[in-house]
Each structure stands twice: as structure tokens, then as C-alpha cells.
Image (cartoon, rainbow, N blue to C red; front, side, top):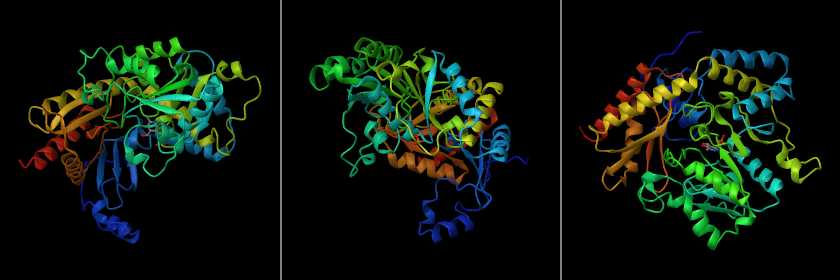
Length: 443
Ligand SMILES: Cc1ncc(COP(=O)(O)O)c(C=O)c1O
């Protein structure tokens, strides 16, 4: 299989084919900022005009094993030859592998085809399991775009505007996004006040603790700007859940499958959730997602068979084949280890860039899930969305694709290449970001 190498910009972007495609689709070609794929391999995406981009966001943290990993492609092809619909043995054996990955007893799985859908399924599961109506979620969180998922999310008001009324019974509490603390405090002086808020404020003013079914939490808040909670926060949240009989639900859709340097994000804190939501990288691009929960969880309160989850497409043959192959590749190619090593390397290099670029306010993340906060004023942490957009556009023109996101008005550029990235590839991408920042800073 011929390999791609980049970055290589030969036309535009956009070049003539993409310009025609966008124009014919009634779109402005100058809006071209995310590569249209003609072919993709490893960390590279080639567009229809022959431009080869480094994908610094792994197709939204989906291509952890790299685009079109030959073992994943082979597994999907082989399965397609036999059957592309209805359950196969691989769905059953995949449950065993997920059990081993989670390592906390027998599991049942509700399959889905997206992270959003699986968050919706998890809302149903925790309410059914506990008989309680209320769910806690966090400010800054992103759980997806379906009705349940936007109701859980606290990422940006634009996700919710004009879609209401949303799913009732979901209450938001502050996340430990220390760089932009919702309580305007400083860690460690704050003594994890955001965690204390749940018992001291929420449970004493607007949330009856005994009516809370579950808390939904991201191990690292991704789209909010790649915020990593400080030591003790996740452990404290789990203890709080145990104390009040609340189910602890980890949304590992973005952090799962090696992205942060461990199989699951929660592994960094040794926390075992009651329910885990998986998606994105699970099938390396073939849609598959899952809610994984203790086998006793629903049976304990409801001995009847539960009609929780009828779907035409459940554990699809292509999705489960791709998930097995993805897990094989992550294990055999030691991609968790590479994610950790390359993440540390990229973070070091990006932190060094802070000496050259006053626009970098912070560099943070775990493994290859890194955010580079762009600010007008480092001391005041004043967000600079215009500069963040301009840096991403400039990088795109130079053949590196990334984007910027954030809550509370902040904007962080995402540095999250496929977990197969080498030091040399990381260097090339960071050099392009460096040059793009210099250009935007007018130097
Ligand atoms: C933590 C988290 N949960 C859920 C989702 C939604 O997943 P999907 O886009 O597959 O619906 C995302 C997507 O970015 C996510 O980051």
C-alpha cells in the first residue's frame, strides 16, 4: 500500500476541485478549513487536489490507530465478505474484551453508533437502574449533539439555543477547569472548592441528593479546552458518589482507547466508574459506541427483561470487527505507551514555544490530548478567539489541520494526532504551528 507523506500543499487550499465542489454545493470556497478526504493514511489526509495535510485532531479523536490502519482495513474487508448485518460472534467476544479493559467485574453493554447516542442510552440506563430522576453534569462538558447529550452538555450556550425545552432533571455543577476556574479561584488554595460545591451548595440549595441517579463526568474535559482535573478531584467525586448512592458515569468517548496515554482516561486516577461510555476511536472510523455497565446494575432493581434498547443496528458486524482490530493494534503496537511518550514530548516542545509566543497562555493535557490556550494577555488570561482562528487557518494553508475550542470564552488549539505519531512528525507539526503563530503575531 503506497504511503502518504506531508505536509504538502500543491494547490490552494482550496485547489480547483475543492473550489468547484464547494461552489456547486452552494458553499463559500474560502470557508475550506477542514480537509475533504480523497485518501487518508497514518497521520495524513490527502484532499481531492492532492494537498496532503497532517491531521492534528485525528478526525476528532477517531483515528487513534492512524487512518486506514492495514489491520483494521483487513478485518473490515474480511467481515464484509461474510456478513454486513446482524449480530456475530464478535459482539459477544468484544464484551469480554471490554470487561478486561475496564477490569471491574462482569458487564453488560448497550451498543450504539455514536458518542451522543450512547450518552442518551446512559441517561435511560441510570434512571432505570436507580429509579431516580436527577442527573448531575458539569459546566464546560461536551457529551454530544442528540437531545439527551446536549441536555447533559455545558460546553456553550449555542449548542442549546432554540432547541429547548431540553431533557429535564439535569443539573450542572462546576468542573475542575483550573485554568478558567468557574468559581474564579486558584488551585491548590481553593482546596477543590468546585467538588465541595456539590455537597455544600447544590445538595443544600437546589438538588435533593437522594433523588440523584448519576453524575456524568469526562476524565479530561476535552472540548472545553482540554482541562485536566488536579490530583484528588476524580477520587473525591467517586467517594462522594459512593456516599450518596449515586452512579458514577465516565464519558470516555474522547479519552478512551489510548488517547491520554492509558486505555481509559480514568486509569490515570485509578477510579473505576459504575458506567463507562465509549465511542469515537473504538472502531477506528467504523461507527460503534457502547454504554458498559455492571451486569447486576439493572437486574438488581428490575428482574423483568428490560426493553431498554431496541435498535435495527446494534453491535454491527463491521463495527465489532473494527473494534477488535483496533484493540489488537493498540495492544500490539503499544500505542498507549507511544501516546504517553509523544504527548510528553509534544507538551515539552509546545511549552518551550511559550518563550517565543506571548499568545500562548497555557499548554496542558494528558498523552496526545493537548490544548494550547491562545490569549491576548498571559497574565490576565484574556481569550483571543480571533488569533486562535487565524493560527488554525494559517496552519491549514501550510498543510497542518487543527481547530480550536473552549468554554468560558477561552480558546485552545487542539494537538491530538493519531497515536502512531513519531517524534519527527510531531516536530514538523509544531514547526508549522510555530511559523503560523509568528505570522499571526506579525513577525
Ligand atoms: C466526551 C464526548 N462525549 C460524547 C461525544 C459525542 O460523540 P459523537 O460525536 O460520536 O456523537 C464527544 C464528541 O466530541 C465527546 O468528546
